[in-house]
Image (cartoon, rainbow, N blue to C red; front, side):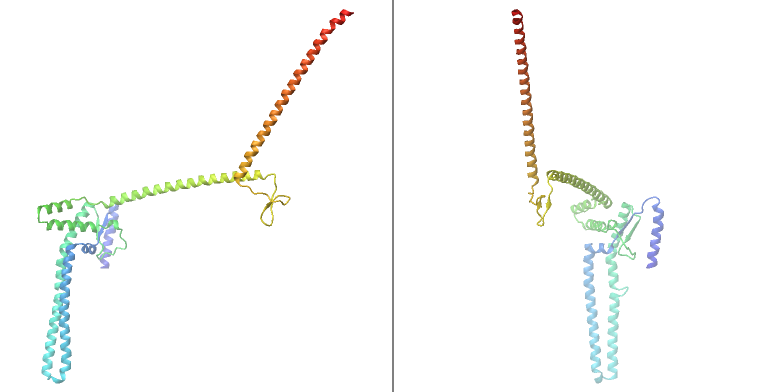
Length: 338
């Protein structure tokens, strides 16, 4: 058997290498045992044959027990029997034993009823399997088809190359068409037989494409999540830096330390009140308002001072103008008096 398997593998390898130069080698396989277990006709006939086998075994076992009992009886009665009677009974026992052994050989021997009926039982199914395999191999353009349950040792076999189920469906359709009696039953069987076969390779390609699409979508979603995480991290880092600057600005003119109790104190040892971010922001807003009011006051005071200075300058000019006018008015009177 090993030489047979080795020879088959050498042939497959040789043909495969030469064929691969032109196109890929297409290989399929079936499991005959699996097919037979799923063919109802074979199961029914096997059950009937098993019933016969049990009946034959029971008959043989019963007769062998009877022969054994006769031997025991003869052994117990030998002291009471003559030599001729003992020989006669031993011959009878030997004859009956030979008959039962012949009967056993007839039923279970290499050419017995069991082997014949098994062959008669399995031969039609094997013919159907062979016909279905040939038909599918031609349609699918298989170069080789192996039987997984045969002598060929298959160390690994991918399920996508197993078309045992298609063979079972083909046998089932053929059986229904053969057993159909009415025209309606024959039409139904023909309609079932004409159903398009499932292209497993096409399904495999579509499944692979779908898996690839899902993988691309998952990768894209993962990238989006990573980008969102990076953005959130950047925003959080900016907020942290801004808060640190705010805290540093709030405490830049106040040196603080921590005492033994973990409290924050100033240079004089007085506790410093820890403020929240909202409180600090509110203080900054109030400080801005106070600064704005002070600047406004300064501007108003400066404007008022300018107005006052202008008013004083105006009054000074008017006073000087009036004095000049007075001086100009008194000079002619003095001349006339002279």
